Image (tube, rainbow, N blue to C red; front, top):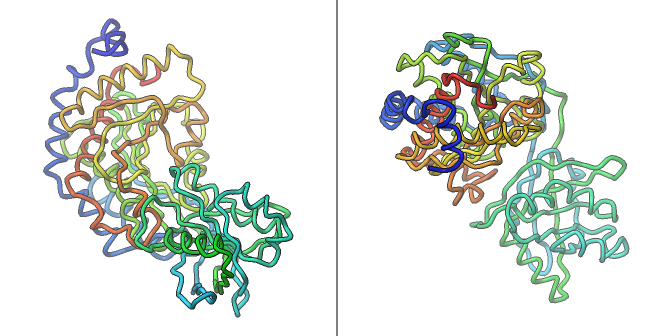
Length: 452
């Protein structure tokens, strides 16, 4: 027994003992369930990619709300959210010198277009921002900057995707190409969001494959002139109307207190948005649905939310905070699944501004829930969690919990044409459903609030 579990057991009966029977029922039901997989398959195969502002996303929202009502969830609502509407259009890139080769690309979300005739320019290649600055404007002006940043994990590497265009434009570059943010590539580009810095010219920017970034680096390092032609039709249209999707099991004793769990309904406009984040939406939704199907009416309200526009605006999470209003103080916990559906290992918890004694008690309760999940390998509870969509309510002190997986291959498929249903193992998906169902039910039913 860990010190945290021992601390809690002195103050109240053991949660792992109290909830052993309902947890076992939920796990058994989840591992035999087909409903969650059917939801995910529908989203992937019949709807497809769901970029903010797209017709596909609208279809996913409408279908999900209708299904929640049909299945018997309570208070199904679709609070309106205005979302950005970026459209990729046709795009292409070609290496012209020293030899002619097509370069697979994916424009980065938010990028501007090239002129209709495209941009043809010599490329300069750098591996980091320091190297770019050392080149200076004299060697960058009029060029296409190619970032060949090595993979050092998602956080360090994604900075080049996020602000690389403006860093290059500040020195006079006419376009930027960014090595895809992934540890492994089969000549597949990975898209994602970028942003421009105010006061700096906006230049077009796209992701290229790891293989092509490495090739360009080798050529330029050997003193070989590299010329690239880039064409992009990307455009940003006026904001579009969209929505979050909310469904509930209303609490039997404390309906005003809320545990919310979910994922984000939008995806990039490539692949099927299977791992990111159809899996999070379908697993969270089905977890709540299984609690309802088994007749387990928790003390508090258990809510599922499919947040919109996580990928290129975070509008859904902010709109949820505004929609919740004063009821945010009644949120007992917020759980987000947005790391794919590889094998679940547990959850991570953060509570902004919490005193150490509050955090210790909360972690003690999480550890006991972890004991209920030990049998399916999902019981590892750590400090440090949350998510982009629950971030706005976490800033008000709501405990934020992140679903955690082994994370072995997620970034190989992330934001690519390969983010498709076949990359998800049905059993691993069902384990996520099981873990979320047990966590959500216990958080919503246990006598104390998590952070009391």
